[in-house]
Image (tube, rainbow, N blue to C red; front, side, top):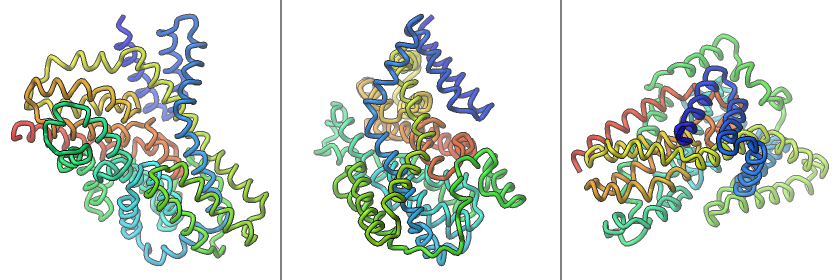
Length: 452
């Protein structure tokens, strides 16, 4: 049996099992072990373990950023700086609609990187969202939907730099005559249908025009009946919420100064890791000499923040392993090989979006998927006579879909973590809106394929 087909079947099994049982990690581990069995036979444990080591070493940057971000959030909470920020901004966010719109606007303003966007805004808005009795599912949806979709629409984000450099290696993109990689990328921005439609739907949701659908509607009903902003299943992610004291006065500057340093440094240096480290140093200077936290409390808060990130990092690491093993089994090449005979110029951009979205969703890797299909779809599109600008937009949109929709993609996991809810609850509650955006995107790419 073709191992590419086997990888697809394993991935489908993981998706179906996780959706039915709402237990993601167990199925991810089982699926990665099954893939290792087909790849390595009796030596599957050795092969799986080697992949685990390789993925940990290759993605140590991601692990460090997430761990340190967890430590920063722990410090902002224990210093009561987040209380001060919540108390200050609550004066404006005194209705559900204002709170949603504020979260949406902050998601657009923090555009440098999706990790920075999701984690920092979650730290800022969680308590305010809770005060307005908004379901945590809503906060997670807003964080996830203003992460990658915002980053790809602005030509000075980490996503834009990655895609611009990737595309400018292709002859069909160079012949556009834009003059530079970023200029070529900018030509595709008006046709980034999935992120554009996603942001429009989120805005309509915030102002109350887009209705609550599926599990999102049930989440609002839960809050109305029980007052619980998160489900019993998500209680384990919210132990700190039980210790909150509404009478605690917090200094808003203990929150704003570290967060301001974090964002400014990330913009200037484009290095989120150094920005988080600098923010932690600023926290130390602000908190310890002024006895807001003792040295022991400072270290304990950081370690607790690290611990809060471990469930997410565990799932993230297993995702990387599954992606690695599926790649070695040839899943991506198998899907492309089967799709190629049915492609022609007018529908090619729509097909590239569907292919990219499918691969990004099944692998949980948006940038990895884009790196694999770019050298294939651009030469093929040139032979067919398809518009290279639309192909760029389709690849980017497909990657954005994967980051936004896949329940084990890093942005989805971090949005869940930042909101304090179980991952599958977030993924399934936003699913109707994801599907609407994807369907409308296919329609837009198809129309433009015939017109352009």
